[in-house]
Image (cartoon, rainbow, N blue to C red; front, side, top):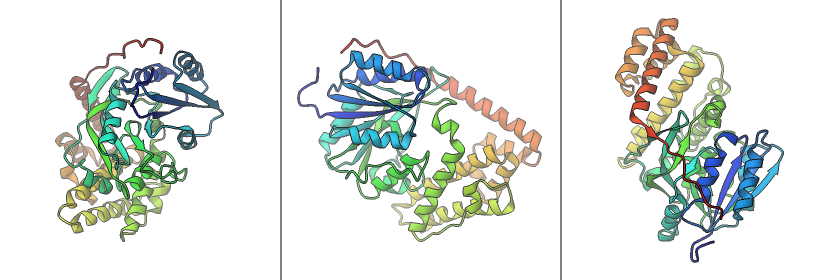
Length: 369
């Protein structure tokens, strides 16, 4: 039964081969304390039991609408969900995440208090190793005046944590662009925040699952290239054009490629240096995030030796933790030793992460609505 006076919220849930975690995701949405929901689940040509799971839940909950069709990709699926949504507010959800019970209620309350907001996201926990949970911490830079700047350089909101206000956002703005594959959220948020206000709730309202088959893992290389193209566009729009053709096409390691990476980072650091005092910390944070994106690209695609050269070229050793600096400086010139040493660092990080984590308890069973 829907509570009177609650705004209707449309939850858009794209599903592609989501069988391992879909049950938990659906239960977490169905058990929301905010009851006035429509759940639009689009099965994007799954080849597992996703459709059967969706149909089973739809029989038990009339708020769940299931659409199934051949695969068209996540951007087309998200836009289809937006077209079908009827709620004044539209929430995103993924098939492998878990929404905490008050997620929708808390976000709807923020819009009720501040109807001028276009988008509201939240802090989140990370699920790893299937059942371990680690909290994320947003620092003080995640204040509303800084969000338009931060969004130029990285995805400021966790995509499945966001809720959109359709009374503020025109339909042509609240639209995913297929020209930015696997970074469509980065493109959407930079466009929204360039013209409309957004907000981040500091408490975690969602548990975000990381696993090898997620898009962020399986399409990491393409995602990074699209991300860098967006940063390049943002710099050009602010009078700092950069030329990175080798970087964008994934050319082999070379001095020219290293120069492109260093030049891109230098341009963003230049923006931070020339920015007004109140904006400089946000631009500095953007530059630091870009450095780590480029470092990740160097490590995963070109190896530790090339990564060490990139750090040296950009004078960025002070951004690394002590054990990372020690490993890369000691072994950066010896490819085999450097790979072994870096694997040891990653294993130690994984152990440290597990020791700081807590167990994820499955959501309680939900009675049929």
